[in-house]
Image (cartoon, rainbow, N blue to C red; front, side, top):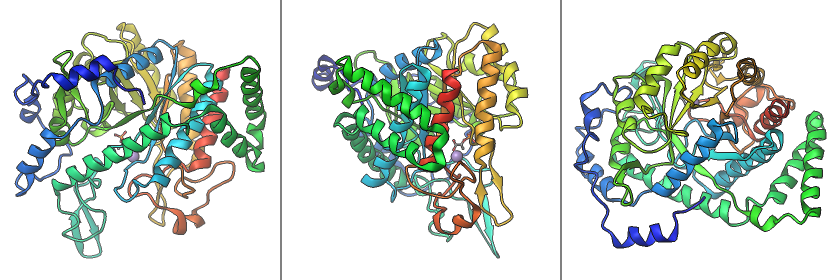
Length: 462
Ligand code: PEP
Ligand code: MN
């Protein structure tokens, strides 16, 4: 992860930071409808928790956030590709060195394949170090004769189905903050300490393609191998390829948390969300006059918005006006999650309306959230073929319109879980009993994630 420059750092150390407490407009969201928000304002620890969060150090730095905006501007211009991936819902127990390194490794492996396929740099981002809260379609969950509040992510309440665990507890925001800090610390160490070495990541990918189930990707893996050997023969500086930029993003759902971690940058006197580099607004909280759009419109971070199948071109235009009134390159990313059966029909009108207005958001496909199905057994899953079909539809639409398919956003893990069905080495429902681990939506496992990267690389290289 790239850090701030030395002069910025020494300035930050000598100049007291301006306060975000009274910065105009940062509390306007409190006058708006706040969708999906926890009921915890009356909790005895609420005020002291917010006070503590107001004082903690930022998790990410304004200079890094600005760098990400520049990187995303390159994506909007068709000069880079954007990869976002990670858990649907991170867990506190899951923030171990092994699990974090597995996710980072898988993302780095995907990125190498995509870099080759696109012949472009890949902007890498984890749905990590802050993805601890979830919007839910229902406030209540009933099991047998007991009805309790739904699980909303470990930064709000517990997964266990009992009354005390499901209480909305503001103290969980502090645990979320500290878990995010240790996760980011490890990510920074991994991505700057040699773990990201191109040759090492490439060797992992050769292992993937050597598995007979994935034989169809062997030729691309071999091409990448030739490219790496060619680079070596040309005297490429592999030492420079031992580190990589890696950013962190999450859904900015808990406005109490996001507001408390808003800081005023001492260089520019502008507000930055410092809980993560990239913050996105979910499909369920993107109302134009709602609280989430309001707070995020006032932060300098690159902002994402999920767009589901009910979105019109007009909705997209109004979101641009609210979140990116100055049409700033890299500011806004639309994360499209239509479902495989809708993407080809619904996406063109949205892109046409936006392109016609002169705005240039980054277009990303999330092929997961429109393709969730519930099995009779009760498991929530996604079919790998539907995920692939939505990605393909996304590329087809962009190709037909001459616009740039800027990136992919997936729910994935580095572990060998069984949560999504199918893939070349197919996951079957019979494995769910032993290897279904997610607390929320089903994720692609390590091999399914790499397979998606190879498929996307094929589209990108056409
Ligand atoms: C998510 O990304 O986990 C999520 C809830 O997505 P969406 O807002 O698109 O439904
Ligand atoms: Mn999800």
